[in-house]
Image (cartoon, rainbow, N blue to C red):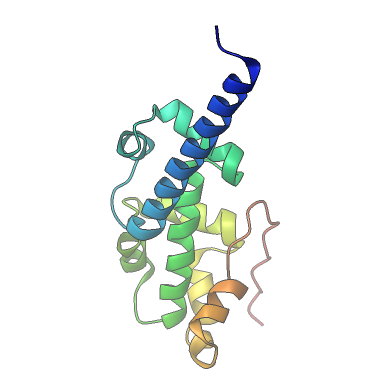
Amino acid sequence: MCSPGWSRALTAAQRLNDLARLRRVRDRIDRDYAQPLDVEALARGVHMSAGHLSRQFRLAYGESPYSYLMTRRIERAMALLRRGDLSVTDVCFAVGCSSLGTFSTRFTELVGIPPSAYRRRTAGAGAEMPPCLAKQVTRPIRNQTPTPEPQPA
């Protein structure tokens, strides 16, 4: 029979191992956000079940792996739209989304305005700002109330 101390040490070691695997998943999402990724494939890569990965990822990072992936994609889309040289459709596919409708809906949820309005409002705006600062200032915030679209005069 195992002593309680041994059991706690084993549990702590397992938690550290799970956290290391979760970091690998997060790093893969950050690196491969434009590739087709799904929770099952991410889970297989770290030898976890999809359900366990989703639960543990949410506990560790406050959102599901899919939400984290979409946030990364929208962050990158924001940067591409600020450049102003790509259409919304081109940006959608460049960041790994396969549906323009899903991309536009998620973009609007996270940013507060549709991607086309964001592109018009910010095209060329980041030219005078260092990219590291632009990324921090324009990071999408979940559950933010939408900014109303200005009406033409």
